[in-house]
Length: 434
Ligand code: GAL
Image 1 (cartoon, rainbow, N blue to C red):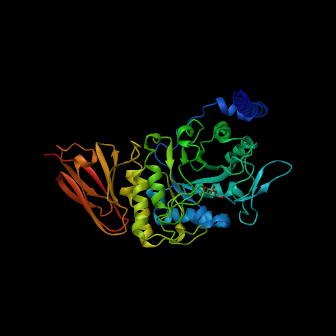
Image 2: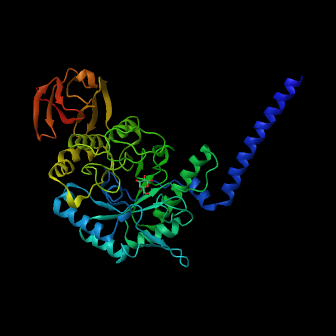
Image 3: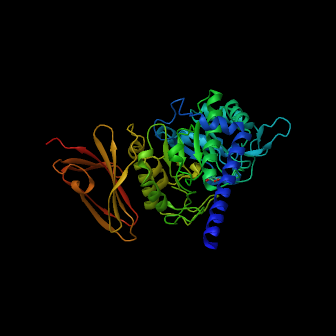
């Protein structure tokens, strides 16, 4: 008897807690009309942005708190002089710390007067005069991750301000969001916060590419397009490491980013891309965000795999001072063409054995890109027959090596490569005319 009374009391207690949490959520929704709008509105991609993965540069890893108009102007100049612009890199994005503050009277954001003395509009004009586009950074919470003013509650004002300045790209972070009640609640709130900014950007009438940066825990690949985003981060920040496993929010390395991307291919395509974060190529353990540094073989693997993924190619080194190896990697037009292929299919892993992997990406014109990747810290030879990598074993293919810029064989029934530690070789396969 006593037992069943206790059980009864226990159930009543649990139901009261559930009822209380639901009540809080409803109250919160009623109190905030911006959230209401965001909840029902599907923003989509009204300006047809990012039909191929966005390409550009971001200030965070090389410059962090020292981003300035001088750096941005010189970066724009280097885009032109080094051939980056001709290779397709377009967006120059100022990350966190461009801010001076928010005006207490007008409520408008303004840039740091020392580092941006000419203002953002003049800077955008300069970047546009070079045939390039300017990006900016804000946050869905009250503060950015660097504790600068965030856009929470100021979505329309800030979007309008960005449009008036001539901004073409907004990276939107997720620190200091004040609405956290429970995990489930936070998931819904994140969608609403991103929709609030997505709607505000759309309402400006200016095509502003919307880059969602909540790092992946709330599966933005499921709702990013609906919130108006054209790319969404799949993982926490990448730093200049080859292998640094994920734990909660710590930065990760190239290898972990590759593994996170392996399951997400079906969510990417024209107008909406999985974003495994910036290229660390060329950082060589310098800049604001230091890792352990990678070697050029590892940087080449990052470039290869990001292109196999149809990932946004956002460079993260100081492009004013690239060495020859970095230029060779970032300016390889053949690997970039794989990234930018109009089919927009993310590549997927088709073989994994003894630390050797084959990734396959369908390309336009009935072609395939195939990446042969060695995770091991020793050199290995990898051979894959067509049947091992889900290709028709009765067919023969001609292969082209995109890093050697040379044919790699005609009428082949398999592909083979001797790979150094952490090396990736990429081939384009075209069906052979027999
Ligand atoms: C992080 C973001 C980084 C960078 C940084 C700025 O949340 O993932 O890419 O933007 O904030 O504070």
